[in-house]
Image (cartoon, rainbow, N blue to C red; front, side, top):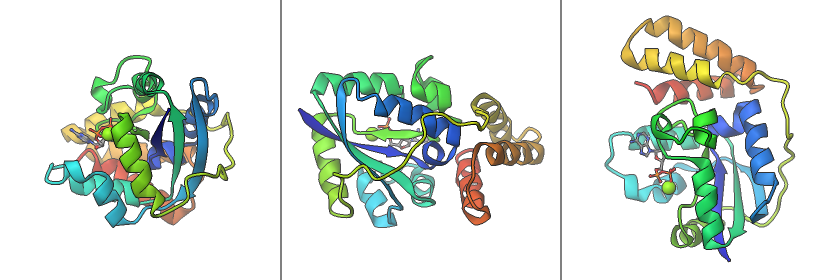
Length: 206
Ligand code: DAT
Ligand code: MG
């Protein structure tokens, strides 16, 4: 068995229909065991270390801002190496435009690196990531209370379409305004946190 780190990223943690879908998937524990899941707002230095291999990439500053903007759900699973590989397959490719149809990321990601969930990609990275994050928080208690369904609408595909317009500079202001409205319907964050969510999601498409 191997350990792996799992993170509901800000979009996966706060867009309620997405969170419910991720929880249905993760909570099924089909071929894996969930050992910890807890709310935590990671400090910048932790995210910079976690994504150290991406330092210098043009999207790195955005990635750090995205991952530190709000509390996220962080956890640990154990699985066989092949089961971990299958989980990654079910998750889908990194960039939403390339994510396999039917995968979690294709279904719920808005675009680019706004891709809902982190999951360690191998036994080696799983061990290293669990070790790193364990220095900041315990990863062996499931204390998050999550719902398996949500009465909020899931606007993924409209958000993705609008993000495309926003990125292309087509109806930029209208697209941003509409995205904000749709995200408002999907979330129940207090105003200040909601503004952070909108800022980091739009920030992916600048
Ligand atoms: P994954 O999350 O599929 O393991 P990764 O470890 O290669 O992917 O990259 C970590 C995160 O960095 C990824 O989830 C989103 C962001 N990212 C990677 N490549 C990107 C790109 N070309 N554009 C935007 N964001 C990217
Ligand atoms: Mg990775």
